[in-house]
Length: 415
Image (cartoon, rainbow, N blue to C red; front, side, top):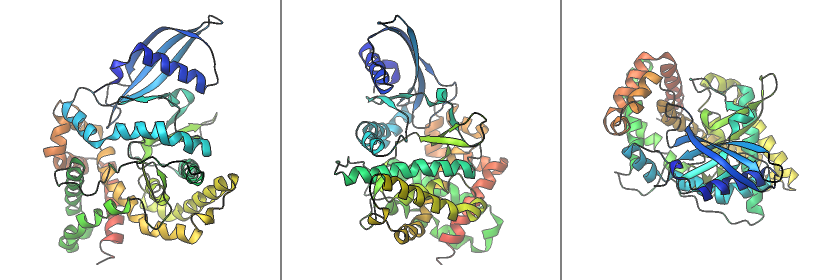
């Protein structure tokens, strides 16, 4: 398996040429030096390893030295079980395909939604370094975004979905994207299915500890996994609704915000990590990003307004391309799809957040040893997550909030 540590001189030169071309610089150059450095000592990515590639060029016409600092993602290195999991998950192959064959047309149809990509091949992706341009993550450890951040995010999301519609309207070929997060027709030992069922067992242990549900506990536990499993059908390409390119992984850390001089409200945002991209109903992305990084109290106060803003953004982006949104998704169809897919946001919240908002004292149990990853996915997940639930107030309150919304609206109301 090729990694970022195996770059050739030819590949480095190709990345530099792509950088100069995409930044409207045309010049002959000589590579003086380059080096790869880990982004941090701690693991920065669950499904990959992150590096900075620093290259010093000499522009031959002027003799000027130019330093590039690019961001690299490679398949994880060092941990065999982790590498096998990612390889089985096919995340790098999908993201490479998205950057090579899908995003260029989508962005050309509307606007930039992702970092510029200078290389995508051999389990390696090389991007512009958004951090050096003032982009940063928007959430604290609780994983929550505020209204202004979400409003900014919805504009980028609407641009991506509108760009997908415009591309399809121009009869551009649709590149197949096989579902790798919630695959259908797979054997019980499939790693994704095993992972899903283990997550449900963890969540049921949390429910057992919530006093609110003690009198209805048997019914809730008996129906919990089945209701969670509805996501496997809902994320499929719809036979009756509009389908667009979806990011498929919209939680707070996959959204980078750029702020103005005084750093108050974000000016724009970019999406990263297209490893779970798919073609399906646009409201799946929408309801996910309005659920994972929000509380039920926030949604009660702001969901209606933000849903309306997304539809307004979509309308404007399509109008600029000479298209009428009603020809693709009427307002009535849009709000009907919100009702149909609202459960997806809560399912994704529970599945993502029981992992990604764990306190560092617990994630060290996952990343701190050579066997931590395989132990977590085979034996220790319940113990590690229960430790977080019992000892960390942020983790416990966030998980309880998600589970209450899911149980109250999608298990008890359907009984």
